[in-house]
Image (cartoon, rainbow, N blue to C red; front, side):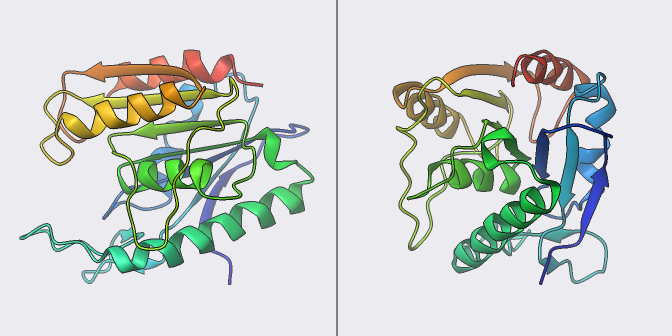
Length: 211
């Protein structure tokens, strides 16, 4: 069954940008930034909704988190990842766009998933990866190998006051992507676990040079 999604279609484009939201957000979250990060309308943007609905009705997630204890049900990571990978392949196939012309990106949970999509065993050669406020994914059954960058573009952004991921996880992401041969750009911002307009302006500059 396909994931619920929000789309910003561009006529005649042959590039896709997949944007995965964080916990308690939903499919419109990162999609709302698309006019800013892609003003030249080079990409069709597709923003899927996580399969786990919030108990209060609004928002969704890719795996469950207890917001009082921050305990995570990481067993839900692999099923969400597999469902997301299948969704991306299906949407790219329907659009007639090869996966090599698709960028995967996301914030928080979506960032972890984006890195997992690019680095799992047998991963397609996506055109690039954009990860925001996350660390390296680590879940049962996930074999992560980001050493296949081969000069492909990657953008990593995080906040210096982000208490959820701390400052060690960003260092690990930067090291893995850098050592893996990705053409990496990384930026730190004076913020917590969030997004800023400055961040999206930097992402706009990066995205303009991809494909």
